[in-house]
Length: 606
Image (cartoon, rainbow, N blue to C red; front, side):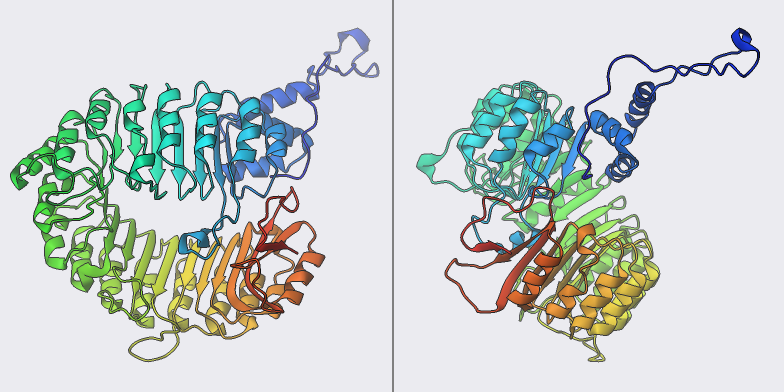
């Protein structure tokens, strides 16, 4: 957000310019157009209605105070990437006509249990400000926020026309809060609960599915809600929701119940299958042929996910839908290349594919031979331990690079990699925007030459000139970071794990990547000198996270002293933890609100 406060809108009369009596003989001269600042501002507001890009709008707001005011008056969708970057009061004071809000909380490393529980990011202060300021609020997306059942109840009662709620990686709520949303949001169209892991004891569970009062539901996602649901109520809800296009159910929904849901909603475009094996929730025995007929009748399907507790004999039942699929997520399906092949050979139009590494290099070779239009690939590990025997390697990466030349984004977990394979990908897939290579295990070199992986990552940043996100791992020296600083001019997000050999590497990145917004570093040898080398750039970044590095309290305090408008948090796992001068976890972010007032005892703001 701009640091300029919003001025009061200028009202009253328009100031007209008087004609120049020295021109044209007095009364016969035509006066200039009667434009005032207010008229120009109204024209600008009408133009800005058509400007959707957040970055473009931010650029407009920095031109001058008048443009800043006009942009604020026309912004309907508000994105706040850090809930502590601005106070709720300041946000609602500046942006007075917001109808949709995206709000993010904890740092991303919370997904890896590196942020202690109860760190913060509570939603209530924001809700208390939003409720009176935006009674017309329609859409809300929260990511990594803590939200209670009471918060959800208040939300449901505060916004009469509310219709879209998405919660991603949030915590603190249960089925009682979901029931309040379902019951009171009568215009609800979207309820997407993504990776929230809602778990409750049976005696605490509320039958939230039966509370829905809407018939306009378009999307219902609850695949990570760990509680059983009322299957009869779910079936009735689906049957009376003719606009439903997206449905992702949890593992308590059996194949039998899934088939019945599909029969009642043949218009679905996105389906998450829940359990995809025998038993597990009733619904009657289902023959593979019957399930195949259900998928054949679902002619609108373009996205499939789920497949938990997979019985491999059921997987070919999705084949009738494969020709139309643009997205297929098998990241919970423990399958082999032989089990994947009969399905993937029908997926010629696939653009997004997520899969476990159990398919091996052979499975990725089949993907490369079939999915020529693939844009995004994610390969996850079945076993996340460092000493596991991964099934994919440089061979699979090379195959993908040769067969999927339109690839834009890749996340690839493996145990073995070579510089040559990474360089081949950089040459074949030069349109890459996201490249995340996670070589599991610490400091692993090129498994053929035993050399550091410097040249491979160097080739990526040299040849993929549109790259904005990069994750590096393996045995890397300062040379790799020199390449990143020299060629990664568009990088906005960089994640580093178990890499580097001195502060010089971090200095290369901080001095060479002018557009860097998010920098995440863990288990790397960077210390105070590397940290201080970025003093000139931290005000331009959204955040810096460093954990298990070589930082000292003195170095962190110097950053806080030299950059008083940054918030510098020293995070300990326990309040009593005291390692002297060593700083285990550092979180640095820019904020217009200053230090937060809800920091727990294990967080010290320097």
